[in-house]
Length: 257
Ligand SMILES: [Zn+2]
Image (cartoon, rainbow, N blue to C red; front, side, top):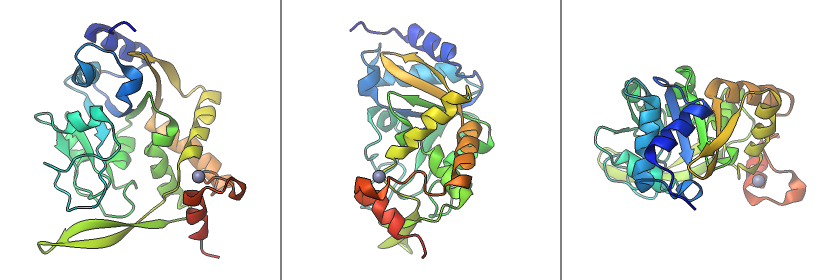
């Protein structure tokens, strides 16, 4: 495959609809995007150029919660090389949730990364909640809506009936303690339903970025269409019992009877 140049990457992002001066939350799999000029750092540079100096770039930098979280040193867990390199770049801020942190750079970075409650990790008062509040865009780059954390925000706003707790190490008075953190967790496979909901309403732009399939939507549209569906079926994001999905069964078992 041909190497996509930096200027081509920026053109692709603009053609997709990424706004100069906007807030852009990116979920990415570099494997789908490569090869591009400059590798993952080149992709980050193109994303920063696409929003410009007046724009704010945001990525998830979630961690495994198995040690005390230090935003300056704890590596990401299953977030991909792009996000792992992004939070380590000079001037990039990182929020402090021990499992659900995000990194951001740009004028709104401090607002997006300010402290939040432990639970829910992705509620209104969280980085994704603030991207939503700011009218930001969500870019899925080589990944599915199963990676779209903004759908967890919709679950929080909808007050879905399921909630699962996961142990997470936090520091309390200087000592490492394991605390349970409640979240609307499940396998997230059915988050991909949002693809058709958004497409059917003309609310999702699709194209190529590098060699990867890219989808762009407004965070407010993602939340609005998900809330419409959750209002009629609060467990729509859980796999049916017939699928024997352990994670979704655990979520279903948490619903008060
Ligand atoms: Zn499932």
